[in-house]
Length: 317
Image (cartoon, rainbow, N blue to C red; front, side):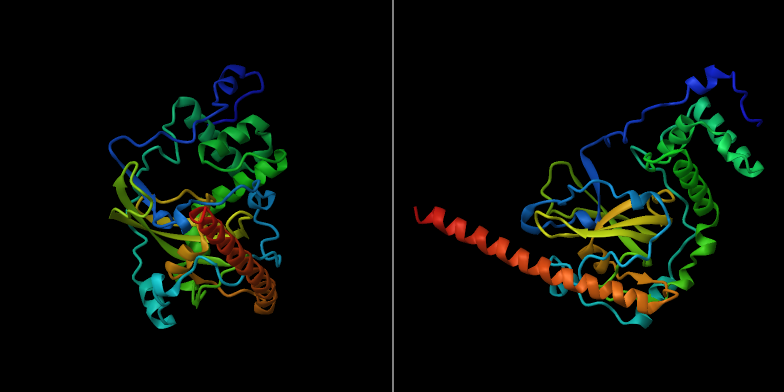
């Protein structure tokens, strides 16, 4: 399909400027990820930080900007000991990457009309012809919004994001095969790691407490790059942002989707990683992470102790 002429205002004006984040699932049950199973002290994610601009790019992902060593919420007794490397490799080798993709309810990829289909065809042609820069800014954002990707940045940043999405979509499993993930993270992942892990998806009744896991309805295998990890200021819970490189299984994530997952659940899913070109650089990042982890654990201990003291004071009134 040829690129639209500059005076084709009707087609360009018809492109969606805003999209809802997804429809609410119908019925009396809802699906939850494995990281929604249990929450510390009955509370949910502590995620109040602004989006990190670094999440919009693949550049600079190996900077030693790590969080902490042990996730304060990681309990080996509760989550189970990590298996030995040989067992993990065997499990990875049995992963089925040929499973048919299943559509998501409240889908990550909204139902498309003629305008959206025309936009996809236009982007494909411009990408093939090496003329992607002909896209207008709002067309770039419309394309990214359709794929639930970040919309921040100038036109060059948006174009870079589109190129990255297309490359990962077409070559993700070729560039990041399961066989390349040979190192067990051993409960200690950091920014810059390229990892593969599994998620369990459970179905439970709507409104049920978070402690109610529900019944398992599927598994998803994800490969991604850790582009951010930090501690919440309120509860010191370790949260990773993982940029999805490929995803297979039950309702897979789209390419470059920024997935938030707690550290304890990333560790529980027995994550494997690729080797770094410079493992010493990773060790330096981990040392910084360990130091900050110590501070986070102490802060958490003080917070819990203060909370208990306050509870006792109320009982003694």
